[in-house]
Image 1 (cartoon, rainbow, N blue to C red):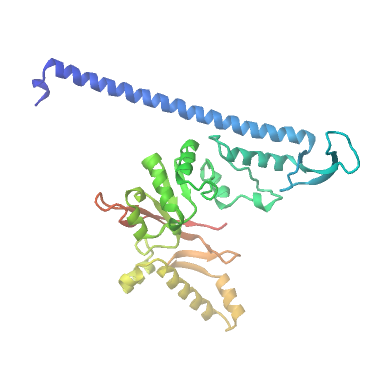
Image 2: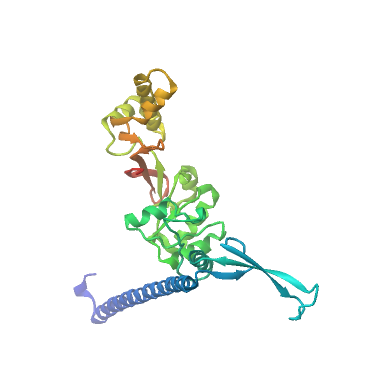
Length: 341
C-alpha cells in the first residue's frame, strides 16, 4: 500500500512513531554523553587523589606504617605496653614500623584503588625504577607513542569470574581489550562474557594462544571479529616479496602453514653465513650478526645486538565466517613490520 493510499490517522501514527523514535534516540545520546562525562570526572578525581597523596608524603620524605613489611626503606621496632597502657615487666610487645618513600606509598595507594570498585583503574610505573617489579612492560612503554590510552589492567587470576572482568572493562570505557592469556585457559569464557555485555562495541585482540581454529569454531558467534596476532609472516598474506611468492608457488599447499616461510628464510640465512665464514663456529655467528637481507623471503631485515630480527613481521588475522558457520575461518587482516630499536 502506497503512502498516498494511507488514511490520515495511519499517517499521523507513523509520523508520531518516527518523532518518538527520534526523541528516544536523542535522549539516549544525551544520557550516554552524561554517563561518559561522569565516568571521566570520577576517574580524574581518583587520579588526583592518588597524586595528592603522593605529594603529601613527599612533604615529609617518607611515611611510617605498622606491620607492613612487603617493601620498605627503613625498619623501626618499638616496644608497646600490652596491658592497657601500664608498662609492667613482661607486658611489653614489639611493634614494627616500616617507612615508605613517596613513590612506594603512592604506588601502593594506586593498588588499593585498583582492587576497589572505582571506575578508574591504572598502574603507576616509571622509566627510572628502583624496584624491578615496577618496570613498565613492553605494551606500557609503546602505548603512549602510538597514542593509545591504557584504561586498565585486570588479571583473570585475581578475578576468576569472566563476567566480573567484563563488567570492569565496560566501566573503564575501553573500546579494545588485549587478551593476554590463551583460548584454552579461560580465554573462550572471557570472550563470551565480553561479547554478552558489550557486543561488537569492543575490539578483541589475542596472541598466538588463540590460534585454535577448532576451538574458535566451537565458540561460534562470539569469536567473530576477534583479531589474533602472531610473530611471523603468513603465506597467504598480501604483498609477499617475489622470493616468498616463488617459494609458495613451488611448494604449494605444504608452504601454506605458519612458520614455513620463517624456516625457509632461516635456512637460507644460515647457509649464506656459513658460505661467508672461515669454517669456524665463531665466524658463522659473526656472519649471522652481520646479516643484511634484502628482497629475501621475509623482505629486508637485519639482526639487532640481542640477535632479534629487525624489523620483524607480525601477521594479524581476523576470525570471520558466515551466518550459518560463524568463526569458521581466519583471514589475514594485515602484516606489520616492528623494529626492535
